[in-house]
Image 1 (cartoon, helix red, strand yellow):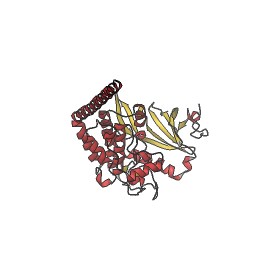
Image 2 (tube, one colour; image 1 turned 90 degrees about the vertical axis):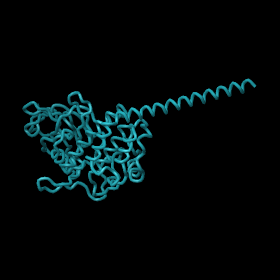
Image 3 (cartoon, one colour; image 1 turned 180 degrees about the vertical axis):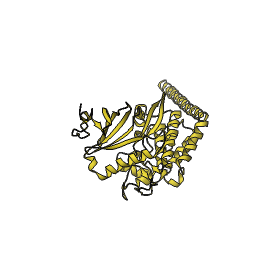
Image 4 (spheres, helix red, strand yellow; image 1 turned 90 degrees about the horizontal axis):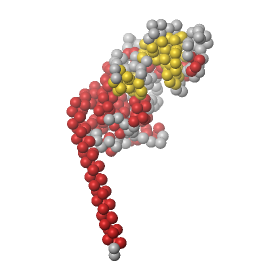
Length: 338
């Protein structure tokens, strides 16, 4: 067994972390996942409680901006009391590698589910969006704007058989609007710096505006809902620059172009959330949440009617195709008999 006082390997050497004890409390047991900047491990404490341990690589820890984002993630997540926000319990540094101790959650992220299934059913899309917005509302109430909402940051957690219980993760890009406890907000970005994931980024983020507020998260939530319903984000392109340009210059397409079964009320909601001018969006995440809940209450009938209309259109198109084929056959027979 490796001692907690032995020289720590860099986080890229995943196997070398197994068996280490961090902070004289958290014993690393297995690797859960890794990326270019760090890795996430499962860890146990002396009581047998299980946690997710997020460790930043030593080289990245030398980058002031990266470490500021890491600290901001801990501060933002711990400031919000919601079952839809991942909790950060502890943190520290092990031989130059900062780490966070978070809830260990079982499930898959929304990005993985969409890659596996392409899109969600109407009912599931509404359920996921409602819970996502509940988390966003709680974050905004604590003065936190996430600024990087995307399917990969929406974890669908197993809780009592509910496969779509939403937890928002990764607050590393967040903006703390109201300092807590008299402390100043952490400096994170400068003027002209574009932050976020382009496919789900609001126009004001794409323009690198410094006055980003909660309506940016409203836009990103609308983009996530769009993809849940259609299997694709609102704006696409071959490069990040193309996507950013389209977000700034083009209105989002109608969700019914790819999902004709979506009821008119829901299509209007998605369109409003994705308005290019933030003044035209829902003023708050709370307002969007109320609209989603209203559709959820009455949406069953609307969805059934929309599905019937879509099936009717398909049936009519099939009949027209059959009639056209019959006409062509008759003409061919008539011409052959001459």
